[in-house]
Structure formats: C-alpha cells, structure tokens
Picture 1 (cartoon, rainbow, N blue to C red):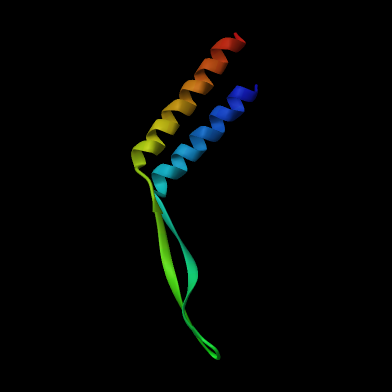
Picture 2 (picture 1 turned 90 degrees about the vertical axis):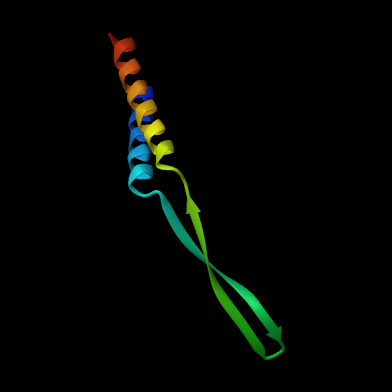
Length: 73
C-alpha cells in the first residue's frame, strides 16, 4: 500500500514539474552601507529545470503504481 502512495506522489510531482518548469524567488542584498545611508537591491533568483525530468518522474510513478498492483494480486 505504501508503494502505491509513493507512486501517486511521484506522479503528482511529475505533473507539476511539467506544468511549472521554473520559479523565482527574491533576495535583498546590501549595496551600500555608509552609516546612516543604506541602499539595498532586490535580486531575482530563477530556478529552472527541464520538463523532461517531469516526464521521467511521471513515467516512473506510473511504473511504481502498476508494479504495486501486480504484487497485490
């Protein structure tokens, strides 16, 4: 039963990785810090991955689900 749940989770992650192949997060960095004068800058940090990785996870999850059904029989 646990392998079926793991397979379903992997399939969901694979679908999400196909749908959303990147995301950004912002960080704030100090540029100048001279006593009372403080200047900061927001910087975008993109993280990207290939949709092929999502397809691989999707197929792997399906294989896990199918193999867990065969072992139950």
